[in-house]
Image (cartoon, rainbow over all chains, first blue to last red; front, top):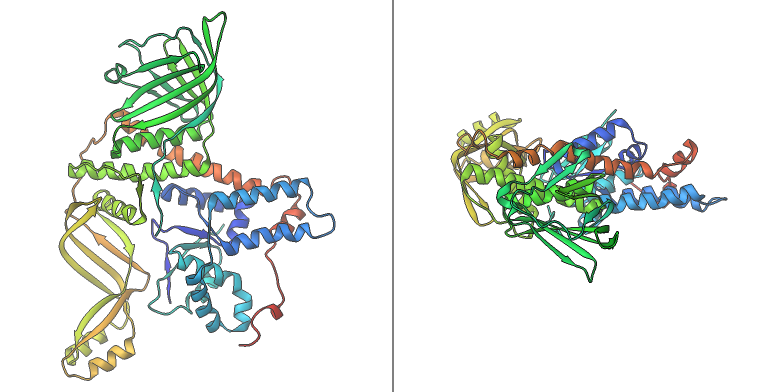
Length: 160
Length: 358
């Protein structure tokens, strides 16, 4: 299994669920981010997939009757600001190659179930980052489909 | 890792919360001491007399600027530029805006540490008070958060280099930009000195085993996670072109596994004595490097003033993280629980938009 723990200086991307929990200011995420930032002196980054997922909610709200109100419009600016300050790793060619390798071996139903996680894992692997997530089993499944000589997918499991 | 840290102590503008100076400003004399007080950090920094004769104060009435240049540490100067106007019939100067530059005479590790610490602290503090006799300024710097993060990264690298310098009796000059590879070399050398070991990423290690009965027996003992040790052997790290001897070092893998084991077994079974390449890696992707003979730090490595700046670390970290927490919290500020749920829902698409077959 190409899965391993994060090392003291491993840089991390946030899984979308963790980003959401951070936006809700869940204590366990705040504490994990405190520890992480004390170690590496920078915030965790996002992947372009998580940026998509975070902005999707706003866009989806905008096209509904009533659209964005003043508060949601302001919060859209704030999420864009957070993305800018944390930074986002692009889904590049290497990410695409990794994602294709994993997806083909997972099969249709698992692919559909884990599509975003595959893209997040592939992006993290392509940029030599680890993933901070609550969902060990989902990423374990993805890591199980990496070649045995591939760089390990490193996970930081953050849970309440 | 492509991380690059750059050195930028260029201009930071501050709002002047309070700042009226006598005019003409007092000329500095040798007894003058400049104090920087940062209430949020419970910190008062006084600069020693030996640097005060370097204090320079100039006044340019035409442009309405007063400039204080103060050497706060060897190779580090703070340049405060106050913009304002004369008031009370020319007896006083009221400052309306201030800017700060930190100038380094040489890109030494300690100078960078001091500069980046001050820069990050000023950016994270709500109020900075600059005091000289008859002069008191209350400033509020607004530094971009990204710049503060960069300063804290540079501070960390500079501190680690200071540790390496003190332990090895060398000096380093930091380039304006340094890469992820430079950072890794700094971190590994620092950990070898301070912790006597560090955990590094694994890579695939090619072992050579003869294709004979002994080789097969070896494989039988190693077909499950096994401890491997390499060394001890002399280790030097290269830092900014300088070779740093760390004494004899060892690499230990606690859970090494053989890759391509079926191919390896088949080749060993040929029994013709040829050397079979056996790829091995750590199951958990970790190699522990141990340096029992690495240089040591002296018991009291830093003067008091530098130690005070080192001791700011946890406060800087807390405020730094808090600034990012505030950004994250602002993304849902003022929304109802229902709106939050709606906005943070992950997208769901039909399977028709996905793969069409297994």
